[in-house]
Image 1 (spheres, rainbow, N blue to C red):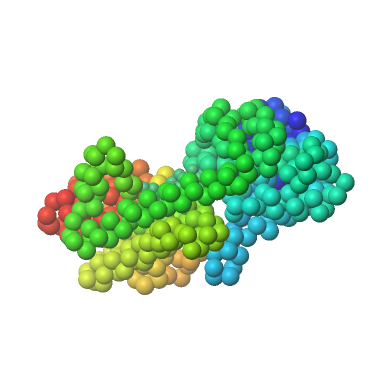
Image 2: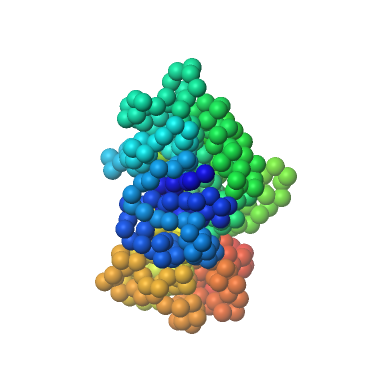
Length: 428
Ligand code: SAJ
């Protein structure tokens, strides 16, 4: 089939490239001229392992073309962002989905299949169907009458991990939620072309909720670890030691504390559930609050450490939202480091091997981006904010004498003060 992927971001572009690799011709649609031109040159505008070679190959073979204008196709895959409305209430903003659906409606023909992949509040796929039904009274849309519909509509969320997108796009299982079972079967036939994981069919609302639940589950579990770290700090215990021991129980698997939860999914999606059922979601809401509070706790703890040791140069290790990637958006590490830079200025150095320069909010603070070796030689306080492998492998001799605030638990032997009890680290 001819495929049209709308939205060429972190999910849309890899998805388009993988479909093209499976020998389906793909048109990728994006509102940005820059993105379209970049892809049509065979280049990419985002960073993801192995994506550059894959895109170059499918563009060269003529299987993937990008455009700002939607064209007729047999299958439409919508992968546009679903952010919040700026109303202070974390209300989901589905306007990009509806704008994409409106464009699809303009070129839709009998037999086509529309698949929504964007993380969406429960009910969005049906809302999209209703919008298209209003725009195209000449077509029978699914689930509105008992008659066989002219087009199929399904919801199929991605669940890939940044840094492993291509691998997970192919190998992860997929939930495919049709507005009707027939819609689900149509979408299933499509995904079977390029997904090696198991594809499970369900209804659209269950699939929408499943995606939100997966990320809310992880958020609540990280919140448990983060809360433990603050309790341990209060009690003078090493949280990493406690978690390591507790996880020896066959049915306990506690996640790792950190400086907070970042990225574009886990810190966002739980609100889609909370917004849909505010009275019924106190735990999920509290999980979000705990993870956000952890960031502020880390700032306060670091500020105290620096203020108690005036004039000692400080290195913040890491800005990325998680280990071994160069994505600095919605990053708790970046939040903490920028707060410290604003308060302590040139006393703060930033180490981030994945960054070419410091983000804009560091401008005029006096803080500088330095390399790891320089930081280890010159800084008496090391604040670990990201568990990049390059930090993890620094041997204890190279950081001996430095005071360490390890928010990620990467250096099991580090202590907050030189000479303090071995194993007792300030973890939270
Ligand atoms: N984190 C911790 N402790 C942990 C695990 C993670 O503090 O034990 C932090 C990370 O450092 C990071 C944040 O949580 O700041 C999120 O990282 P992550 O690796 O848990 O997840 P993401 O945001 O990269 O990707 C998630 C994945 N969802 C789940 O694992 C349930 C991915 O499969 C989804 O496709 C993706 O969200 C998405 O797009 O929704």
